[in-house]
Length: 168
Image 1 (cartoon, rainbow, N blue to C red):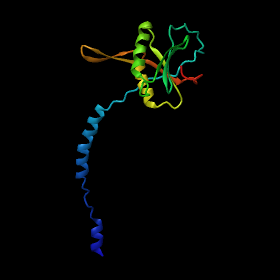
Image 2 (cartoon, rainbow, N blue to C red):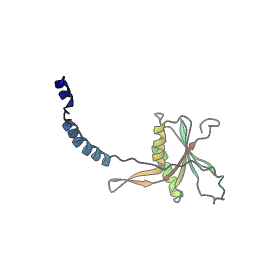
Image 3 (cartoon, rainbow, N blue to C red):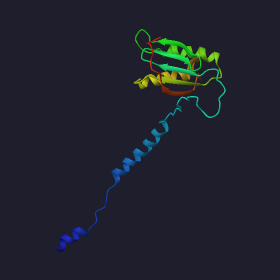
């Protein structure tokens, strides 16, 4: 019986060499990847309904870009529709035409920086992102290098009004 108790009393050493090798490789790998991983955050606000407590000075332009299945509708909230941009021949939204028209609007109203993107129900997320890019940024070439300029960088998101009487 004594031989069994001696076997139980001995404490085997724990071999953690393989675990240490794993940590030596894993920690620098994770630290290097953490440097290259960046998260971009875009501040977006809900559209203001104009019922604030303080009276606001009338803005020169309250830009709204409405995204429908068959078109973009660019409008000024104060005066009404400005332009309708239909889908292209393939049945897809024409983001380039939207961006070009908004460049024209920006030349008329250079101090305006905010725009509301109003989406129809069940709009695909990718269309929202592409519309935001078309509204926020001008992509151009300067000395052969691609350059980005702000167009209407302060973007709000909301629901588009229901279509009345079909497409314009």
